[in-house]
Length: 390
Ligand SMILES: Nc1nc2c(c(=O)[nH]1)N[C@H]1C(S)=C(S)[C@@H](COP(=O)(O)OP(=O)(O)OC[C@H]3O[C@@H](n4cnc5c(N)ncnc54)[C@H](O)[C@@H]3O)O[C@H]1N2
Ligand code: MOO
Image (cartoon, rainbow, N blue to C red; front, side, top):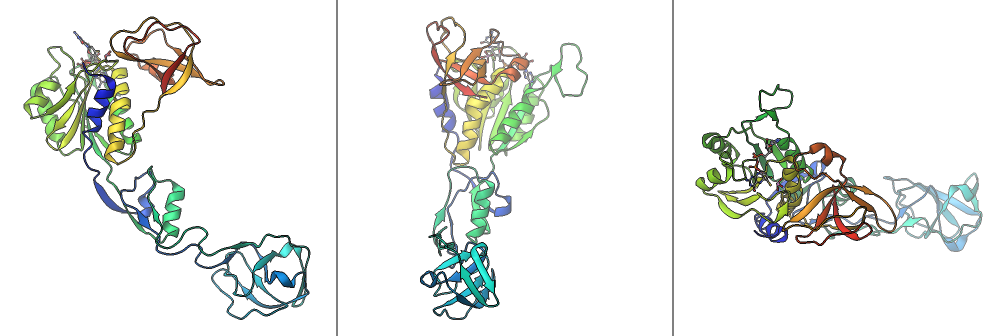
């Protein structure tokens, strides 16, 4: 069986080149830029007043000065500066040529068109032309666009941007025992919970995920679902991945021409994970046990979706202090559900005694997954361990 790291590399290799589209910046929240945007103007385009007050020649202070005009945002003053004069000015207005300081109106005494200025200090209250950005400057953050990025793009006079297309994901759960939430399960049946979680985890990463009707445990039903999913960038199956007589996903996918990257890895939970390429789609076959499916989706599906959008896929392991003794680990890398308590210098991590990979309630109570390498020796409370946040 391959290791978790080897499996991650093989899954990331399924990403392919980033697909792009052009959108309006209003629709850009959370999207990832796939090409730089170039500022079409300099900002500010002129020396602008940062305050409401008077534009003055600093050498003339404290006055008295004669007010010879008014400059407002959008209404520049076009006269010429002269010694002993000032221009009434408002925030955002171009500072007229010949004046080098704006004094705030709070320190100015005015009578008619005469002003005198109390000691003004060194603050010029002028935003110099280009102090934000210059025409031609390129912008392409290596992360999802935030609201403030959209404001910047707007200020750059860039109305449309090239972004990574949202990867489309088709999520198909399968099993004769599954019924939809809200339905009444018959004998031996349970509610289908996994596809809801997997679609949500895909959407968390910017994907456009759709949930297919539950597949029955027949080759025909699975074939039908694969056909319905074939236009997706990523097909994610859930269940039917193991070795039982009803675990048909691998067989049907192979018949349909799946080029398998791997099947089974040294990981717990999640051993029966499958990955590969099916026609034009990447494919992940998640195990059916809910905790296994969700853990595999976090560790493999989410990085794959980030890679499809050209985003970095850092694998962020943090340190914590173990809160209880643990026995030696087996031959699979183990991800244990655990409660995290913040503390200094390191948080405290308490793995649950029951690690049943079907118990969703425990997963809901977990804050983190404690990661133990294969063959990790017994650990004592107080030792430093690695974890990922949920
Ligand atoms: N003889 C062996 N048996 C099993 C092995 C093994 O190595 N040898 N591996 C076990 C492991 S580990 C896992 S994980 C499971 C995975 O099996 P499958 O991927 O084939 O999953 P299913 O059998 O279809 O389902 C397992 C379990 O999960 C429930 N399930 C499935 N889909 C959903 C869903 N969409 N929502 C909620 N619950 C779901 C299903 O009812 C089963 O209880 O195999 C072990 N067996
Ligand atoms: O690996 Mo299974 O995924 O242990 O439950």
